[in-house]
Length: 229
Image (cartoon, rainbow, N blue to C red; front, side, top):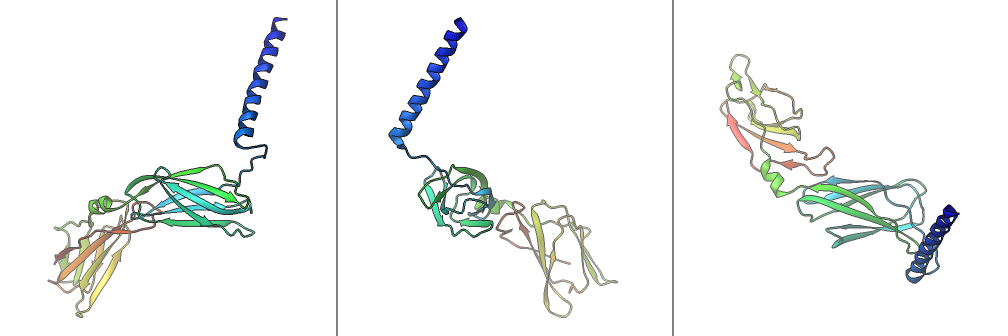
């Protein structure tokens, strides 16, 4: 008997709660059933220089007609229309003029009836002046970077470099009087041999960095370094 009373009370409480929820829905949403459009799938942020690319896929819901991307606590927003095809559609949205540091984006989609999707949130990083002033040109060992007068080969003995450095360019004067440029693309490469270097002339080198593997911008050390052999 006692268990029956408790059960009856629980049912009554549940019914009362449902009634309050129904009252709330009718007050603010009416009796119309809510429909949520499909979301942007596989959303990613690709970092850049004071900008970013928001990437995602539309894989379902052909009724989607536009999407909005918010950031900075929803103080900033961009809206783009969508023309769906019969297949998978890709979003590659570049957002400029962003502050350096961490950033959070919120993406919502809309269908042709004005229904709005649940939010999709994604975080990323923005790079800028602070990052650019912190990168340096790849260094070399001055005691083992030598010109061999017999073989007429200049050997540059590189030191290790940060793995985000993607290449170093070396500009030099060739024995023919022509200005040439080579690119050292392997971060773990230790030796670069130049067979037509004109001794006593300047070698100018500059290193490029990609702060993240799929970043959309390459950063170059602002000041080129010079040496000669």
